[in-house]
Every structure is written in C-alpha cells, then in structure tokens.
Length: 260
Length: 65
Image 1 (cartoon, each protein chain N blue to C red):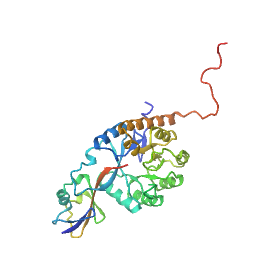
Image 2: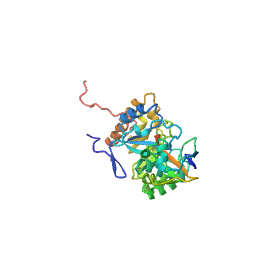
Image 3: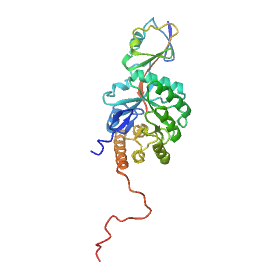
Image 4: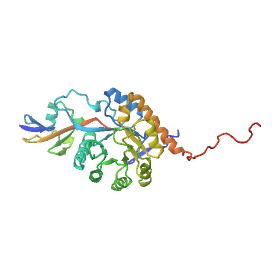
C-alpha cells in the first residue's frame, strides 16, 4: 500500500517501477524475458543496430517483448559524436514509434565515460525535434543542471563505469545533483549488486537503470528479483526517513524498572 | 542497378524500398530505414523507388543497456 501512491513520473508519464533494465548480454531470449519479468521493470532499454542482411534467420528482439506491457527506451550506445547520436535517435523513433530515448555520447572506449560537450549538443537538437531525452551523464551537478535547462526529462548520472559493477562511487555528488535539479535523477551504470541499488535509492534517487548487474550475474533471474526488491526497499527506506548516524549507543530498551 | 545496403555493395533489380525489404525477408514494421542519410517514413516505403547509387540503411532494435 505504501508503494501504491509513489509513482515515478517522467515527462508526464507514470510508472510504478523505479527500476529500468537493459536487454543486452543475456544467454538467450527466454532468459532475458524471465529476468525482465522478475525485475518488475516497465521501461526497458534497447540498442539500434543494422539488420544483418546476409543472415535473416536470427530471431528478432521485438518478437519476445510485449510492447503493451513495456515502454521501450532505445539507446545511442556506441555513439561518440552528437551527429551519430542524433541520427540513431531519429532511426529509433521511426522503428519504435516513441520519442523516448536514452541519449549517450561516449568519450572513449576504455572508460565509456560520457563526452558531455557532445551530449549537450545532441540533447539540444533532439529536444527541439520533440524527443523525450533521458541522458546518461557524468555525476557532475553542473552538467546535470545544463541538461535540465535544455529540457531533458530526467538526468541519468553514472554510479560507476558502465559494466564495472563498482557500485555508487560518489554518493556525495549524487546528493548534490538531487539538490540541484528538479527532474528525476536516475542512476545509470555501475550497479553490481542489490545493496548498490538500495544505496542509490536511499540517497533519494528516483530510479536506477542497469543491465550488466543483472545479465552478467550467475543467475540473472534471481538477481533481477534481488534488484527489484532492493530498489523498492531503498525507496521505502528513503521515504521512511532514516535515523541519524550517531557515534555512541542509544539503548532500545527502557532504562527504568531494571531488577535490583 | 548498384546500390549500397548497410554499407555493403549490392546489385538489385529496380525496386521500391518496400519491395527491397520484402526481397530481403525483412518485416517493414520492425525496422527503420534511412535513404541517403535521410529518415524514410514507413508510409513512403511503397512509393519510393531506389535509384542507381542510392545508399540505404536498415536498422532494428537489438539487446542493449
């Protein structure tokens, strides 16, 4: 019941789940479908790639995804310039008939950190073209504010490098970002296990997006459920308001009425 | 007639974009098409004839994060 009135709102659209999951790196489609189901996610990311012309026997991702149940969030993964990212978003909108995009413009192959200059350039163009832009960005409050000023529907700072599983490396920056922008803050990348997702949510982040943390686990379906519970637990804990941290003990049992 | 499909040289009979997709066994509802780097709206597939030297990109969604 406590969760019922706590929707995630992105560009006026309401979602019950605050966990967004990717569709990459699974052993096969049935495993992917079962993991997405267990995660409870309603928004799922996909990549845009050339159709393999020579081998047409491969099954299509969309044959396995119930589009009535899930909102697709196409990404611009692999793009290193604003121009390529814009082109990919235009193709994604035509393929998916939705204007939601996860905008990422990468800086280099080793770190996969964002190139924020190109990111801002691409975001400005896409927003003018009517896209709902959710940008993957550095955990930099100034860049996040500029993305919000441009009209991005959310900001998605990284917790740690993509696929690293290093968790929330700079909770203080995330807190400053939460203090700086009014749009939803969604931690995108770096989550390795359930406690990482819970930490992001306990900080007050509005959602978490992950792929490798689930798909790369030894049992992706079990990890998907663990992440589902962690995001919900972290959110509830944030809303419940934690006790302050104290150096010394504070007894839970009454001090009066002790036997002799 | 020589065209480029997804970066590869191809020799095809004169076709519309829709006919080209059908010949390649591609469901037009599941893809997006760029013709000479411009998005081609789905409704234009039947009425757009490919010309010598055209470059066409056909993309779809795959697993990603």
